[in-house]
Amino acid sequence: MPGVSKQGNVTDLPDEAGTASPSSSKTRIVDIPDVLTVKQLSDLLQVSPIDIIKQLMRNGIMVNINQAIDYETAAKVVVTYGYEAHLQPQADRKVTTQVRDIKQEQLKHDRAVGGDTRPPVITVMGHVNHGKTRLLDAIRQTHVMDTEAGEITQHIGAYQVEVKGQKITFLDTPGHEAFTAMRARGAQVTDIAVLVVAANDGVMPQTLEAINHAKAAGVPIVVAINKIDIPEVNIELVKQQLADAGLLIEEWGGDTVCVPISAKENQGISDLLENLLIVAEMEELKADPSRPAEGVVIEAQLDKTKGPLATVLVNTGTLSLGDTIVAGDTWGRVKAMFNDVGKQVKEAGPSFPAKILGLNSVPREGDILTVVASEQQAKDMVEKRRQMEEQESTAQRGVGLSNILEQVSTGQVKELNIILKTDVQGSIEPIKNSLAQLGTDEVRVRVIHSNSGNITESDVMLAIASQGIIIGFSTDSEVGARRLAALEGVSIRYYDVIYNLVDDVNKALKGMLEPTYTEVVEGRAEVRDIFPSGKASKAAGVYITDGKVTRGTSVRVLRGNELVAESTVASLRRFKDDVREVTAGYECGVGIRDFNEFAVGDMFEFFRVEEAG
Image (cartoon, rainbow, N blue to C red):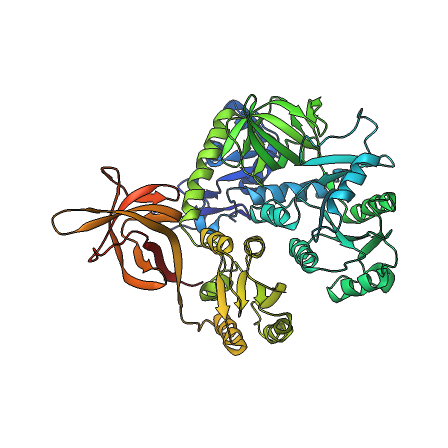
């Protein structure tokens, strides 16, 4: 029988006579994804991994069983076993530009083979001014690792502390926005989230956001009730607010660890760290340090003297000096590594944060770092990722109400995640209760975050990370949120009547929702001069104040608050050259179809109309 694998498939094609029995006249086809491991290829071909490694060595490629290889490399191997290699169709591929499935497969392997216990990776989140920074400072100052001399300085955005001989890695991020931004890029970095809640303030709006972001990531939450040194604080009230927000602490019969602390007075810090180790033990965090490293870029920068620098958190394996690495759409060879206090190291094992030197350009935060066998393989992987990103940038990446049924039928979506923003708090519960009654056997509706106020960039990042949509009820979205949503293909729907909101979601789940159209403002410009353009026409000399202008796009002319004209951009010039597009901060000449009555001070608003998701 033909072999079958989740990473590809094997098909026996009959010969011209149509015989079904095995014979030498059959052509055996194997579908291979862009990237897969040696172990996955051996499973696909049903041969020993050792034989695969030997074949690769004959081609001058030195790898081990868990190392990733690209399609071309795998294709050379399958030919020797009598197969014909085909690139797996795009619709069937599980590999994205971050090689997420390879990473998940390797992490599963680490747990299955009983890899070594690795230090937990912790992110601290919470409302502004509730003490996140002071807590991190207290941990840094009082738990410097014995192996390091002197005080820990913030050389990189992650560091390790040691508690009773066990290590803990902390991500020094700005909060849940950065946490979710990395998840949106495919980087599931955090093992445990510490939620800091001030005892004198209680649960606040950003506290709720942090809770929902952590829940969407599926990581356990440990609550640190801070500022217990302030007189007459009501800790029990804070616990009740946490319960109302869906976090029931252990002493109330729940499963959320809660530790009272005072970061200012250094109270309860050791207790918090010990509880983090207990939670980590329950999570059974494993990694295999003997394999090639897989990691995530935490932050990156271009140093004037050293060139591109990237802070990497190793998830599994060991990163060593001289390793050839790929990170997103860049690659290089590790020339030097530094730990969190700036000391040079030769190796970085699981959960170890290190700053590396040697990439040929600056990667992006959240890029997956992979060790590969050769420079040629690295170049090939980078080129493929760039091509795939170009393809993805032209497609709608987000989930939308108008295409939810299609995505359900293809298995891409099993639940509709909704971020709900309303004008007032009182509107939230009626809408959530109404949405909770919807759903089908194939997909259920889940409100993963709700709050009052305008739709923000943080809401959009959560929608990206959770493959959800945003619903605004009697509220608007911030400019930055609209831009990010348009860039990432996130659907934002606006409603003023609850019935219409619920009815649209219900129709979408049943495949009856008619498409709606929305207007997207692409840019704005101010008229600063007017000059002739041809015999009877004029052009406006403008300064692009925001966004961009593209030849052929729709435009409206505004004089004060009055709409003067609405047409399209007929011509676009920079100096004497015709151009297709001009961005913010530049001047250009704009001609508008069938309109010449410009006035200095007029505002141009460039827009397009598109189908709403």
